[in-house]
Image 1: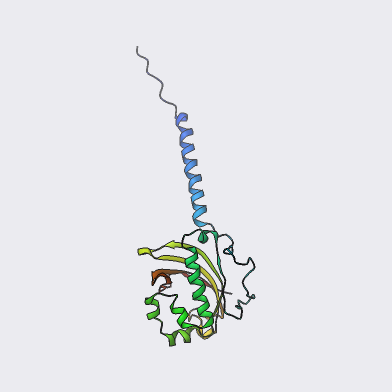
Image 2 (image 1 turned 90 degrees about the vertical axis):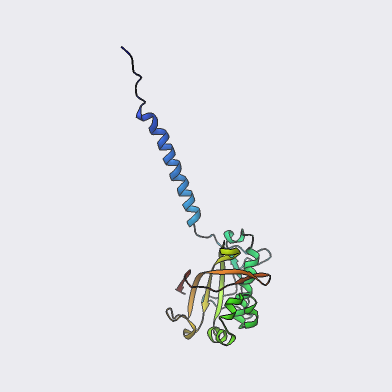
Length: 199
């Protein structure tokens, strides 16, 4: 009479399987937390004051038209952070000061060609932008960048978007940035990655 060895216990496999499942669950939770966490509070750039930009609760810029571009730690850690913030600052200051020539130095040739000076002045004559915050910088196609930016815009009702006619709007949008003429410039925006709400 031959003796058959006892079949392996199911309980012997239960503990390793539970350990693997638990490890995968924890790793997935940590990954999701990193991907979906809200940006931390913005930190000022080197040499900038830690005080808030000169605005009121209504989003009124200081009289010079100067703007402050805040930055989250996530965006600040990107190698092109300084280049992107420099363009954003120049772009929003040109809008606030109604300086079309300065604005054209911050946008791509394609964007400039779609916005003649007369249209630009008509569309932005009362617009003032404040509280600019750079949340994130991501790589785009063919060496471009995508900057996730938030800001507050005040304007007359007639210059507000037709489908969102408010005098004060908080915007969050992705600005595509293209390297052109020796620097990054803001390219045409398709509007698909845009969110807004009333102030």
